Amino acid sequence: MTPQLRAGGIDRSVAEGVFLPNHRPVRAGPIEVMLASVARDPDRDLFRWPGGGRMTVGEFAERAMRWAGVLLEEGVRLNDRVASFCTNSAEFVALQYGTYAASCIEVPVNSELRGAMLRAVLTDSEPSIIVVEEEFREVVAEHLPPGTRMLVLDDALAARVGATDPVEPTINDAADLGLILYTSGTTGPSKGVMLPHGYLPFVATNWLAATRVRPDDVCYFVMPFFHIDAHVHGALSLLSDSVFGFAKRFSVSRFWDEAAEMGATWFGFVGAMASALLARRPSEPPAHNFRFATGAPITPEVFAYFEDELGIPLYQLYGQTEADHVTFSTPERNKRGSAGWACMGFDVRIVDEFDDPVAVGESGRIVYRPKEPLMMTYGYWRKPAATAAACRNLWWHTGDLGRLDEDGCLWFEGRLSDSLRRRGENISAWELESTVRAARGVRSAAAVAIRDEIGGEDEVKVFLTLDPEEEWDAAAFFSYCEENLPRFAVPRFVEVISEDQIVRGPGTGAIQKHLLPQNNSANTIDRHQVFNQTSNR
Image (cartoon, rainbow, N blue to C red; front, side):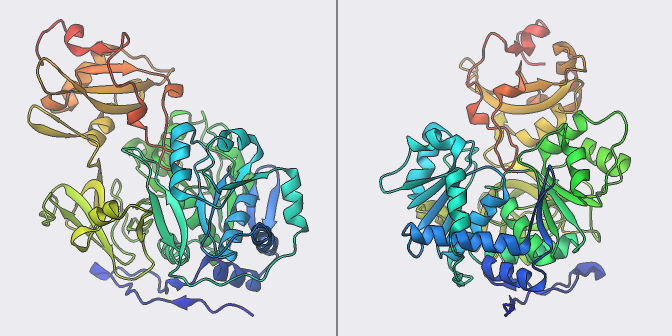
C-alpha cells in the first residue's frame, strides 16, 4: 500500500505578484517517503555513480531494510544512536535509512576528523554502534567511548547485510528525533544539531518547489554525504522521482566528464568548489547538460563564468545545518549576488546586538524563525545553554551578518565571529577576503587578526594561496589593497601558503582559520617593510 504523505499548510503567495508552484510540505519521515517512491516505480534509477554504477529505488529500499535487520540483530534499541564513519556511497545512504527503519538516531561523523576532534564527537554522541569503512578501522578504534561497538564495513559485513532478511520498517513519528549532525566547528567545538525525522522530507519539498527539479533530472553531487545537503538531496530525489548522481569526492579534473557520464542536469556546490572550477576551466567551454546549479557563496567571477560563458543559471541560497532552506533565489526572483528571499515559510530579520530590527539596507545580524513545525533544528545535543542562547527572544540567532534590501532579498556578509576590529572600526573578514581574491595572482584568502603588542590593537593579516599561472608581487598586492579597501582594512601582513597547509570545512569548504599558524613567521611579509615605512599609510 502506498503511504499517504501528510501535507502542511504554508501559504505560498508572496509579494509583487510572484507565486511559487502550489505544493504542500510533506509531513512524514524519510521511510514513508522511500516507501511511497518504491510504490510509484521500484525499477527507476535512484543512484548513479562513475563507472556505470547504479541502484534502483527498489534495490535501495531492500538494502536499507536489510541494514535495519543487521542493526536489530546487534541489539540496538529505540532511540539508540547509530554512528557512521564512511565516504560517499549508496551503501552509506542505505545504512542511514536502515538506521531510521530500526527507530534509531543517525549520527553521521565527518570522516576527515582525527584525534581529539573525533574523540570529542564520539564522546558527546555516545553511539551504541559505529559503522566504519575498513580503511578507517584504526583511526576510529582508539577513540571509541565505553559501550560503543564498532562494525567494520568490509566484504564480510557487506555479505552479511546481503544475507539478512529485510525487516518490516518502523514508521516513526515525524516529530521524533531522527538525526544528530555535527557542525564543522569552524569557530569553536563542534555542536550536535538535533533534527526530527520530518525535517528531511519537509526541507526536500521546499527545495523541490524552489528549484523545479523534474523526474527527468539527474543531480551531480560531489560534497560529503555526512553533510546536511546530501541528506536533503537524497530525500529530494525520492520525492521528485529524479536521480541522485554522485561521486566519491570532488575532482576538478573529473567534474565535467563524470557529470556528462551520468547525464547530470543540475549540481550543488560550495563556493570553494565553484572557484576551483573557474580557476582551472578548460581551454574550450565544456559540453554539458546542466540547466541550473545551486550553491553559496558565489563570487562575481563565478557568476560570470557559469552564467555568462556557460549558460548555467546559478541559484544562491542561505541556510545552515540548523535550517537548510531559509532563503532561496528562484527563477522569478534571482538577484545576482544575493542569497535569495524568504519564500519557504521563514521570517527573516536583520537585528542589532540588542535584537532590535535595523533599517532596510543596513547591515546587522541574521535571525530567522519558522512558520511551521519540523522546519528546523530542535537545538544542540546536550548543550541547553547554547540552545537557549541561539533561540533567545523567539528568533534563531545564526551568528551570521547580512542585510535585507527593499525587495526582501538577503545579502550575506560573513560570520559575526569572523570580524576584525582595527583603529576603532569593525572589518568584515568576508568582505575583505572577497576584495583580496580579486587581486592579480590570488586564488584564495583568509583574513585573521594579529595582536600588535606595541600598539595594543589588532593588525590585519591575510593568508594567500596563489594561482601558479599568474605572477604575484607583494608591493603590487599591497598597492591593490590600498586602492580597493578602506584605509583601516588594508592588511599589515601577508603570508603565502600552499593549499596543503589549509584545512577546509568538509561541508562548506570554508578555511578553518583556527588551524592556520597563529603567529607571524619568517615567510610573513610586512607592508611597512615593503614600503620602507614605520606607520600605516
